[in-house]
Length: 316
Image (cartoon, rainbow, N blue to C red; front, side):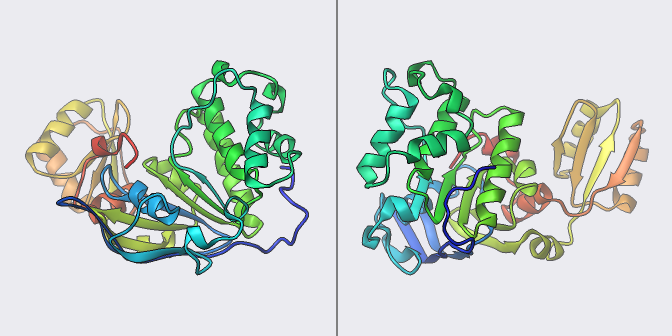
């Protein structure tokens, strides 16, 4: 992967969220939130739809005014930064690109607006894999290509901090793997990476730290290892040709579960000694039963009061 800059390999600024609170009328969107995002690491900001993730990110970037608390980058509010786009690069939502504008032209305009060298346009086009499409009009781009262009726009200023809200939207599996490698590379340079996502399995392969929120409140933060060790709940994976009937049995028994595939069901919060008799008493045929330990999805469900993944279908 090409280097982003010729500067020192150690860079990045901490993001500090302190007592952050936001009301929208009678709705408490963010409730006295506190967490720190460290430089040189990829931090996942995880929570179900409506948990306050996007509102928090918008307050960090000065787009929403908090009712209380502070959100700072390197100890400064976003509006206090002398070189905002050279300090923080952000992708919050799909931009309405001018359909007739070419990709390189768009990025040169972004660079000019931020006071950066227009030559950065070609650097970031290469970084996000759009060099061959530099002269194409954005109106002909797929959703995944637009997402890459959005990320390129955030990187034009060679920022020390990158804030991404659901950056894998529209990317195919190859694109998601590419994005994972890019985030890890940028973090290896010392940059601060904060990424929100509902793709928990993907996040488990990408992030160093996690910040888990629900109903605007902090539920857990730290490394994946520390969060996992703090949750005793395990996840049992049952492979069966009777997955539909197994799901019905688990629903009746009020046991949390996740349908992972046509014949695979993850059962949360039960040990083999507890699940085995339930399966036997209902005469459910099993091909395989494995103890997965406490994975990120099981932990997430435990910390967010058992909210189902249907509620995670869109970003908060």
